[in-house]
View (cartoon, rainbow, N blue to C red):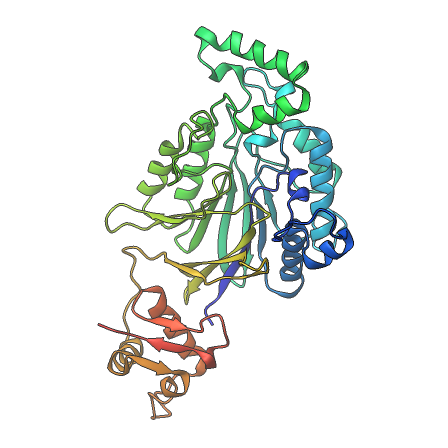
Length: 423
């Protein structure tokens, strides 16, 4: 098969409320034995982390990327519990089984310690940083992007971790005409009779405006523009570059300058992958100017709903040609399984060159319309011209990436493939 990089995209964890989410069970009898209930259903959080660990232990993985919102609200006990759980359950971090696994973490709006937030303050990010360091996990980006370089058998990808949470918890970002009064009222309720319930309500309905810093946008656009042509830039931030499709009545919680980064990336005319959390409608969206290379945006689900495996497939010569999104989700019976993959071409106007053997294969596929592997391998009876199985697989994947064919059973070994082609 064509070479590929594989990345685990892990969405909002929201510790500790995620530990209280129950599996699918129509529980009408409060007197039913709790032990038997636990046998009938189990914790979605535990099931998701168990499956992620299994993939880390048994499948090729080139990076693990967390989309932020480790906690429900930015307090050290929640961060400590979440980081300890990640480190132990997934064996990530110093002195763990996957210590060398490239791991990226970005902050979410729920990861802000509001008690430490001041005008243009970085202190609000330090509570999460402290917990990450205590459990041997890498730090979050704060003032500028953090870059992770992935290299595997000649393939290249640069991951840029961005802080989209400037403005979260900042008094500066509430209009000055009434900002002081609003903030004083918030502080009085959170520090008084409202307590933890009020704090939770604040984080769910924040009166702030998340944003990238100008330095972040300028730095990442410059870095991506200088990437080699065969490199696949991957940008990670908590917030989406687009508003969600479902009307969202939370006007103060969306990224105020997402359009600035979005436009700049599209003008670079090279494929870019943008991964995020925060909004969980699970779209895979592609943006591009006519004929230009795409900006592919992929949302991660809440951790209690599942996670994504992202595959970047490279053509011979190490040029990225397709992004496969493999969603792991719970089905209607509460079983976590891999759903049908989504395929997004990355070529844009950068078409792969044509060559006789690929043209001949495509012509045969068009003629047959539906071809099993045994038929495909017999397309070239001349042993001098016949490509090897590996070469046939690569040719089929190139045609698949260019949208010229569809392959049934693509997730199975190639001998089970069925290629379909129509004019």
